[in-house]
Length: 443
Image 1 (tube, rainbow, N blue to C red):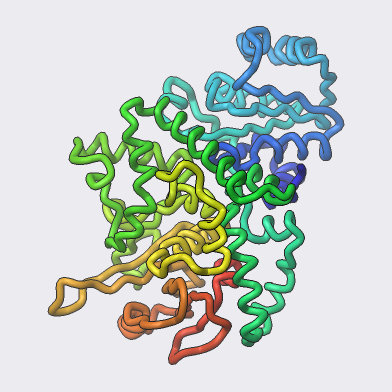
Image 2 (tube, rainbow, N blue to C red; image 1 turned 90 degrees about the vertical axis):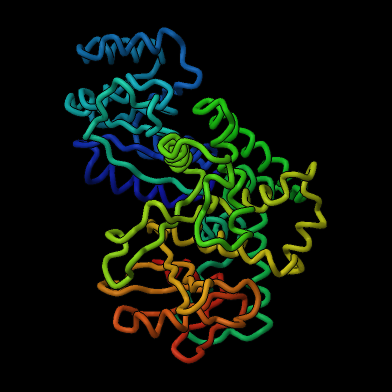
């Protein structure tokens, strides 16, 4: 099943403006749809293409790269082995899963300089040390991040009306309780299914939630296999599995030692960075001083982790059960899950902000005369100022932290949002917005 993806539009821009000077790399977690996007792009936009999938390439194909110093021979052998004719300036060569054959990635420099054809790479785990060891990373490589399907892509695939949400956002008015409840129900379907194309396809084909959950478990198993290839001890997998539990504790930051026990700090940090490089999680850094640039004040020792896909997050929350039962999904869809699962909505907002191409930041500070602390869930840059977000899973309720944040950083704030399931509104200096409008707030 073919889905419209935003990465395709970015590829069109690359082809028009940059393909003569750069190869393009589609980078992202496994199973987010990189290979499908690449193949569709090649078929639609080029006269011919060659796809080399390094997860199943023949020895003869791999031997072609021994001739990379002689492009004429390289291209002749490649055409002979694949039975495909290449046309100058009208053909695309795809290196799929290029992390499995670093020699091909290094060859990009010479191939781009040759200038006859265009090059598209796809990869996951491409920054992992063993995948870049002993090769020169080409500077002639543009990267496009491919995320799980965002809410707009999900709506397009499933017949939802995302443009209606854009109109609601533009009106800045309440839509009414009944309509708001319906739009929240629609969004909870996205939370339950997630944005992994296989899961979305199963939902469109009428599979029940137990079957969809099974697909998501298979994807998580695939991630675990990848993690064990990097670190056979299973500690990266433990870091990944600990994400929902650590968010549930509402702690100020993710604690590696809680997930894997006390370890050598340097080694633990390496494991964390390899997990981040897998693109399966989203790091959210504490900005120590939101008065300055968020990027310049990020604390690498104080961060939270979210899953890159909220659908996988739902499955991981209940991974200890054989298969997440339909009734559990029924509770999620009808908003009958326990109130303390608010961190599920937090993960949704993290995914929505990240899908807009932004880094994730939050801010925490001590309450004077107390062992407790204030915390604002998300911060994004807005010109020279910042927008602040506090997430409430149900009602708007108490919101002491963001109110205090507004007082403390009044000169630096553009807008302060309270995100909940409630309709659009205002409260003091806070803008109340429902979750389904977050994609527009992050644009």
